[in-house]
Structures are given as C-alpha cells and as structure tokens.
Length: 102
Image (cartoon, rainbow, N blue to C red; front, top):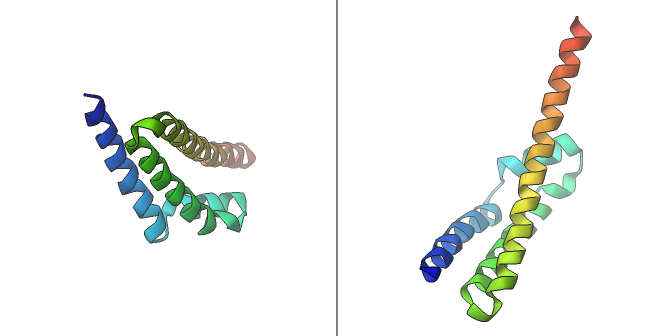
C-alpha cells in the first residue's frame, strides 16, 4: 500500500515537473504579470520544475522519503499560496472597480 501511494505521488510530481521545464506555463506568466516581477517566468518556473523532480527522486528512495515528502509539501504549499495571492488580488481589484463606479 505504501509503495502504491509513493508511485502515484511520484507519477503526478514527474508529470507536473516536466510540464514546468518544457514550455511556458500560464500560471507563472500570470504571477509574473500581476506581481510585476519578471523572475517568475521562466526562472522560477524552471526552478520549481527541477525541485519537483528532485523531490520525486527523494520520494522513491526509502531512506530519503521523509525529506522528499517535506520538500514536496513546501513546493505545493508555495504554489497554493501564490495561487490564492493572485486570486485575491483579482478579487480586490474587482471590488475596488465596482465601488469606484458607484
């Protein structure tokens, strides 16, 4: 059972990591546009993709599985944080534009 979960998480992480390394990602482009920090595209995108692949390698090694899980948790927590940050910025802009028109 434990290996099944590890292989499933590894497959997901490899799939997502390779996508970030391969071509431009809409999420990172949106973060770069909203934050006005050009570092997010492509530098941060490639770094996150490589970090996800490294976490996958650690997950597949029983002795390092804990550190791979910790690294993966950090990467995905950061992704969720940036996602909500951009979503909240859009929500605040929409509310502000609504009240400025009234």
